[in-house]
Image (cartoon, rainbow, N blue to C red; front, side, top):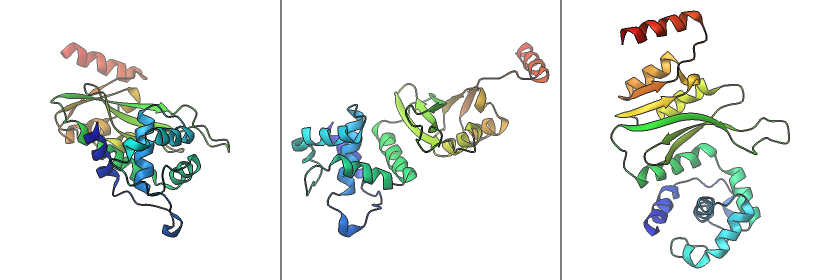
Length: 214
């Protein structure tokens, strides 16, 4: 466990701090590490993060500096409102990638999900993500936000570009059944298993002929 936290500290140490330096009381690294550990321990709010930090203070001092103790829940909230999501995601993905080695012929499932409770009060729709899941290791390899005026078809290639795919089997549902996506997977020296959506008579006929040839 200690080595895992040390690795977490290492991978988030380069994350850029968006705050004004003269107003900083708590290190960004301390805030982020506490937050990640708290969420792993089932924290669901900024209040939970602060409570987790206070309850684990002695243990956290082994890895973090904590010059002014544990941040308040308001500090957690303000910092995460300012953080660049993509930069945070890159650090988090690099950390999870370091925890275990890829398995040969590993199955990587690509799937889209709407984040529960993410609907914005100001009228913006809920957050929708495309994620990659390493089935055998039970590990999330990465996520890509589906922009409001886009869909999974445009988000999937961006996610695939961020992953190590060589010698894996990538699975996608019918939304990802696109020739360009299939070609991209093959270019990365991986194989694919796609769900075929038979939306036209032509597609159905072609599929039946290919199946008959098999």
